[in-house]
Image (cartoon, rainbow, N blue to C red; front, side):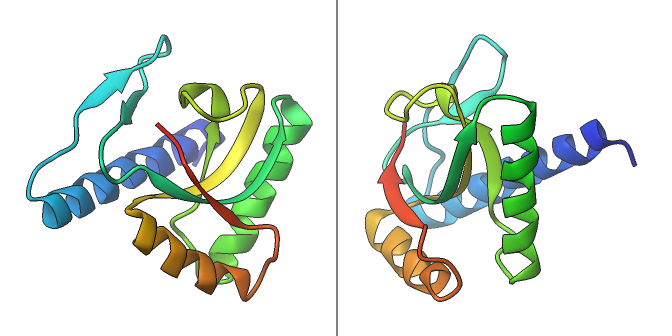
Length: 128
């Protein structure tokens, strides 16, 4: 499987899981917006994320971010994905961010406690 197909499948599965989660928690889907790349980004009440790392937006940074994501998946946290921070209004632009969500704030705090058992670098942040 090519790298791009793999990334596409990861992103697609993340959005599907997020949509199912949002529907079951809120009883409806959150509104969405699209950035200039055509990527749909959900915004709404469940906009808290667990962030496990951020890396410069260059080839090496993307490679390191994916390495971190794979490491987390091997530790049992397969929900993490790598995003361009510029796709979110209140994240610092110019970074690849390893993040897991969308959650309510209390859900994100609970997930963070689990993630902190294997890495102290993780934190939660509201991102829209």
